[in-house]
Amino acid sequence: MRASTVAIIGAPLDLGQGRRGVDMGPSALRVANLNARVASLGYRVEDSGNVPVEQAEAAPEGDARAKYLPQIAVVCDLLAARVEEALARGSLPLVLGGDHSVAIGTVSGVGRHFRRDGRAIGLIWLDAHADMNTPESSPSGNIHGMPLACLVGMGPPELVDLAGYRPKVAPQNSVIVGLRDVDQTEKGWVRASGVHAFTMRDIDERGLRAVMEEAIGLASEGTAGFYLSLDMDFIDPQDAPGVGTPVRGGVTYREAHLAMEMICDSQRMLSLEVVEVNPVIDEGNRTADLAVELVMSGLGKRIL
Image (cartoon, rainbow, N blue to C red; front, side):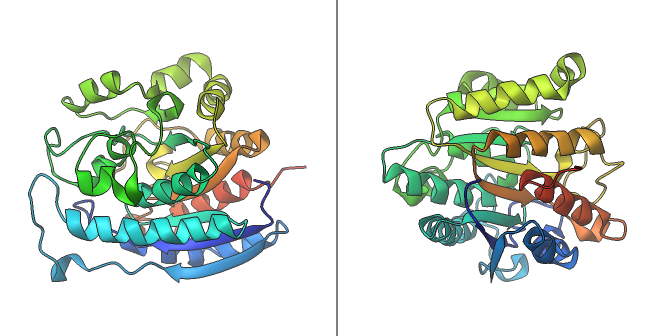
């Protein structure tokens, strides 16, 4: 949050899920005038384009329990290097997904950068899903349902050990907010992991402000700051219909902005990522437009 430059990095990966379309997410965000709108806040914007990604039609699916694992590992390794380079220049990395598998690359790069100074990072995961399956528990074999498990040290070694260390984030500094759709076999992993999970019931009962205050505190305790992952299915499909895996009962438009405004106020965000925007099922690119609005709130836009 202290950076004056925002480094935009596209990661049009859709190999981690079964529904096509999220590979067009980075383009949809750029079409929604992301670069100019971020620059209007006073930031210098550097857009390095997209990391290269193989097409599903040209790549073997491989192990049915972890589909396209080698290809996803290659993309995440490339993305980690780009993110680390941006941080080394003093920029704030803004990663545009793609499916949520890209988080393995983003966090690997952020974590490796701060490990050089002996500092840990935290993580806030705004998402309807826990993303804590493993190849053994996943009902689909889609890796976009596994990235948080990989980041805290559970899953395929190709991803868990990416960038040469594990875990990427300590479970006690990892927080999910907005959880409402968890696979039955996945629930045990979430409970046993030590990751803090705030469900929609917690938000309903306590209010988003209280939940976000606690989440920011947990992700910040003893760390250099936190990486923020915004899966657009965090928001209710009425406001964000164009997402990879929509689930009814998410946060409202205004609650989403409050979450991002509080993230900004904390001055602890090290990197920001927006994932799972699917223009194929969107309505006039309004999910991408909302994503850009939320990025703006996270970067300092205020009503007054």
